[in-house]
Length: 250
Image 1 (cartoon, one colour):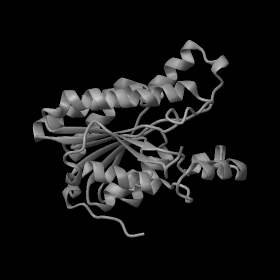
Image 2: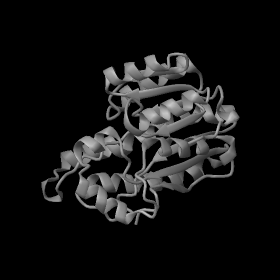
Image 3: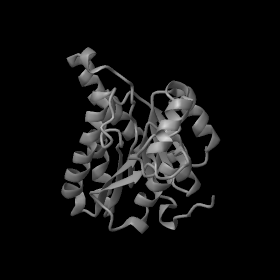
C-alpha cells in the first residue's frame, strides 16, 4: 500500500507512551518516517533500545513504569529537555490482560486503572503547558472497541478503556480554547505479536472475521496511520471524537 505524507508533522515533537512494541512501535516508526522528533516511554529496556537504534536520527526513549506517576513525570521531563516542547501526545500504553470478574480484588482493580487509564491524564497534565505556549497541539488517546462490543473476560480493562472516552471529551472542552485537539482512536482486534502469542487461534480468527465487514485482519500499521492523520494539520477541525480502526467489527 501507498500511505500519505503529512508535511505538517515534519520537525514536530511527539511523545508516545508504551512505544517499544505492538501498536506503539508502529506509531513511533510512522512519526519517525514523517520527520518528527519522537520520544517514547516504556518499561521494556531491550525493545526500547532496539527501536531507538533502528531510528537513531530522530527517536529517543526513557524507561519508566507508567504506574509510578513521579517516574512518568521524570521521563517526560527528560524527553522534553532533549527534544523540545511536546506538540503531539499519543497516550497508547495499556495491557489487555484477561481476568475473571470473580477473582478481582480491590488491589488488582486499582492496578488495572493505573496501567490502562491514570497515566493518560497525568501525561496530558505534563505536556499541555507546552502545547498552550506553542498555540495548539494534538492529544490522541488509545481506546478499545472491547466495551463497545460488550466483550467479556476483562472487566477492569474494559472499564478503564470506556473511561478513556470520557477523558477525551472533557479534556477536549478544557483545552479547546488553546487550540489543543483531543481525540480517541478505537482499535478493534489488532494483530500484534502479543495477541498472536497469547490469544490468536484458527477458531478465534474465524469467529472474528465473521464479525467484521472487511475480510482482512487489522495490522498495527493501520492504527498508526489514523494517529498520524489526527496529529496532522489535515485534522485541524477534529476534536472530542472517536475514530474507529476495526474493519467494521460488530
